[in-house]
Length: 243
Image (cartoon, rainbow, N blue to C red; front, side, top):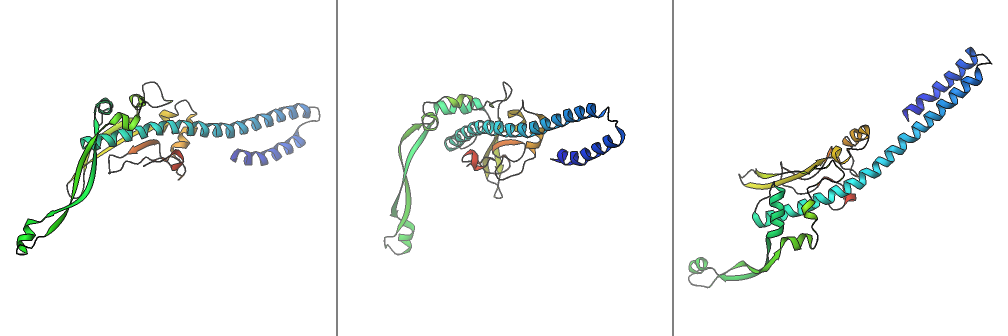
């Protein structure tokens, strides 16, 4: 748009210069050159708009596939934390966990028992206290629970549309809260530039600067955090649930 605005006064200047300095004999040649230039500028303007529209379509399609893989990684990590009490930074151990481990199926129910201390305190008057009883009902395969008959967990670490061998960066560990409790955390991420490596560099740089509630902000797609306890993704709801 800036180029178009600048071209308007430039066009008037060129017309004025032609009328003042170009002879009648040379004007047809100049007109051909100008019309060629106008056609080129119109084409360049159209392509700049078209390329950005095409880039946005490609970006959305690729982000959607990458986000689906990040969701699988998150689901697997949450299951690992539920069973093992921690996250893992290794894809190999995460895959082995999915294939070999089981969830414990439990049922919680309220009950009550005699509170012996209060009973003694009240001179033998029977006093009860409420408790929660957890019953083990059985076990369920992690793989069947999360992925059913699919084997996509074996390739969830591979970044779609990126150069061959590119994997989501994954880390895991613990952070300490204000009460000195160690809390497990994990993070998986990929740079936008890796997903869009075959796209125009100027559009990638522009995409890295985007800030909008309807877009993926920043220069990367990520889920989880190594700085705080959270397992949400940084994508908007238009790409599906991020929690």
